[in-house]
Structure formats: structure tokens, C-alpha cells
Image (tube, rainbow, N blue to C red):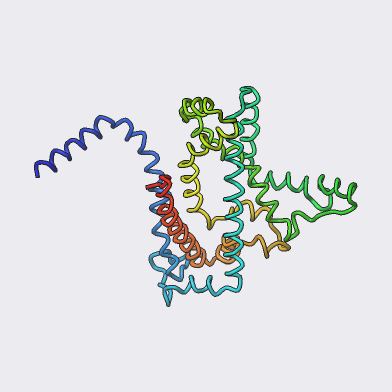
Length: 309
């Protein structure tokens, strides 16, 4: 009993000594509590026949309780929506992380400080553009009627490619525009991890005769392995979010077969038709899948010492 009391007192003493840090932490905790935890009560809508005028509490419970989950599962578009969501998310995950890592390595290896700063600044800028602006840029470049690239193709090959309305090309446009937008921003954390590498490791490798490429392969990449695994884990948690804003702005009826994802379907069926119970059920389904994926990936990542917990 005395041991527990002493440990409690030492814990209180430690908190009091670092009270300024906890005070700084309060706004962030308050934000998460208000906007992340309190709204979780609304997840009960997934198990009710929600009616706006009656509210969450007075709305009747769905019979059976899985009614709205079954509505989504039995939808003729379920397989298409799920496959499109997973494919686009995986493409963004794979083809988005690798260029960011390579770009961070290029910046880290760049010895010209002025050029390095200019490259960083230019690469960060697209991240702050909205998808509406980026779609306008894509239209100016890829439009079949007046796009700059199609004008070149017309003059060189006497043909045009419907990049934005072709099921063959649309996913490539999505992935390419996503990479361009977040390339520099995604490289920040890898670049920060590289700056913490012990310089003596490079010096020892150089003494052994390692080339610049060998230094990258045997020193730089192993040193940031934990960060790469951590970022992969964090992205796996949102693998069911294929990028609603980007796709909703850029897609059209002609590319529904390859671009219609769960979020866009929920927006049309759940929100535009005011079927909030279905929208909540699908959101809960996505959250559970993401949570399970993080648990599985975290257990696998423990082998490489890159787990979250």
C-alpha cells in the first residue's frame, strides 16, 4: 500500500514539474475530445432508422439491426465500389510513398544549398492548392478538345486521347496528379529523419570504399526504415479512403466503372437522398476495416522495429 502511495505521489510530482507541457497539450486534447470522441455517439445512427425531426435518441431502432449494412452489401455496386476503393488506395500508397522517399534522398544528397532550397519550395507549393485548381490545370493540359497535350498529340500523331473521360487513362491521371500534389510535402518527414543520421556512419562507409549509391542503399535507407514502416502503418489505417475530394471533383459518368468509390457512392445515396443511416453504416464499416488493418500491420511491423506500439 505504501509503495503504491509513493508511486502515486511521484507521479503527481512529475506532472507538477512539467505542468507547462500539459497546459500546452490541453488545446489539442480538447480538439480531439470535441471533434473526434463526442461525435462517436452518432455511430448509433447506423443501427437506427434515423429521422432528422426525431433526432438520434428518438429515432426507432432498425429491424434487423444490420439492415443498413445489408443494404450496402447487397447493393449491385458493392463489389465494384470495394475493388475501386482498394485499387486506387493501393496505387496511391505504393506509387505515392516511393517517389516521396526518392525525392527526399535526392534533396538530402544535393550539395548545392541554393538549388536544394528552391527545389523544396517549388515541390511544396502544389500541396496548398485545392483539388478544384488542380482539376483546372488537368483540364488545361489533358482536355480532349483544347488540352495542351492533346494539341501536341494531334500535331505529332494526328490523334487525341480522352485522358479525363477514358476508363483506360482516368486512374493514371488520378495517381499522377496525387503524386504531383503531395510529392514535396510527403518528403518532409523522410528528409527530417535523414538529417538525424549519424555522420560517422557515412564516414566509416566511405573509408570502406562505398560509392554514393552504396551509401544510400546501406546507410541512408536502413537508417530511415522505421520511419518508412511507421508512415506505411499510418496510411494503411486510411486505405478505405481513396480520396473523396479529388475523385468527386474529377470524375464523370463515363468513368464510373473505374472511379466510383465507396465515399462517392455514399455521398450520392446516403447524403443526397438523405439516407443518413446508410451513410453512417458504411462509415462505420470503413473504420472497422481500417482498424483491423492497422492491428495486423502493426504486429507484422514489430519484426522490423517499426511498430506504433
